[in-house]
Amino acid sequence: MKNLFIWAAAVVLLPAAVLADCTCEAEEDGGESRSLALKYKLAAIAAILVASAVGVMLPVVGRRVPALSPERNFFFVIKAFAAGVILSTGFIHVLPDAFESLTSPCIPASPWGDFPFTGFIAMVSAIGTLMVDTYATSYYRRRSKDKAAEGVGGCAAGEGILPVHTHATHGHAHGSVSMEADSGESDVLRHRVISQVLELGIIVHSVIIGIALGASQSPKTIRPLIAALSFHQFFEGIGLGGCITQARFKAKAVTIMAIFFSITTPIGIAIGIGITNIYSETSPTALIVQGVFNAASAGILIYMALVDLLSADFMSPKMQSNGRLQLGANLSLLIGAGCMSLVAKWA
Image 1 (cartoon, rainbow, N blue to C red):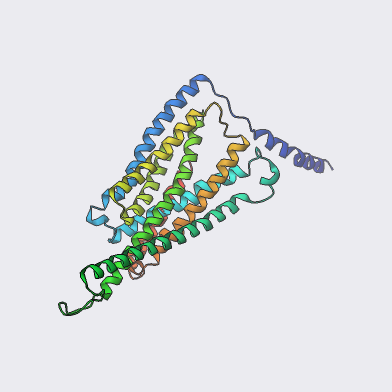
Image 2: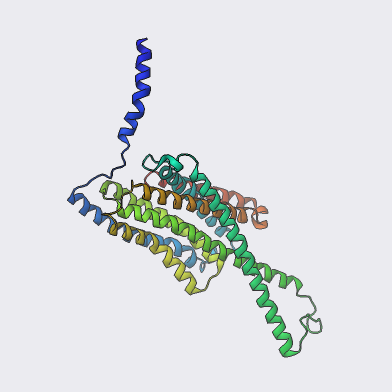
């Protein structure tokens, strides 16, 4: 009877003890801690800016190196590593943060506790990414075909030449060459859509983590995040830079995309610093906004990594016909996912 009473008391009091440790009040730090935290934040802005820029530009500049050309096998291996990083970012970094925010006891139990919103938002985000991916690709392909048709029509009308190749001057047909050119152009358009959608997903997450870091007043929290987020942004930059390289954007577009990616997290940190006095990371509004955007970002990143990056390359004829390339790409994928997962210990 005594043991039964002890167990009953434990069952009743344990939830109260757990909830007592879980507070929705922000921790107060002294003025000295805030001053030190500000110095760490400024250091984080510089470190993350440099790491992001180096990561995203490495594949872009590296394409001038023959070994890193998109047509070489080594590029497939590097891209698999980057895809593993992005996949791990979605599953290990972003999605758990979304679950933590949207299941926090600090937000209203109704409706957030009545339905698994995190998984639902991630699913809807992935489906939405698929739709955008599909419609954007088909739109660019139609526009490309229309331009090609106009060019052929204008050439035929202006020079009086039939848009049919004759064999009077050449002893061979060009049908296969034309098909290869169309296929190459289609691949470029596809990679342009992929790189733009991927950057959108990364930017959403980067702004959120930047604001969270900038609004924090704890030097103990910020200090390990500087190195962790620098590696985080560096690896993500390699993944995005590989997609940009294959998209064959003009120099101006590449520069804009690289700059936009590089400054997103530092801008988030600056915003966090600016709203430190009014922002509370435990407020219901902040938790709901963070959770929703993180869940949406996770859906985008997971879809892009699995469908547009891994599936497209791993199912390609080049990969399927080369056993050594398959082995190298699989190992690279595991290493990339493993390295990014390890970073989650600190960030």
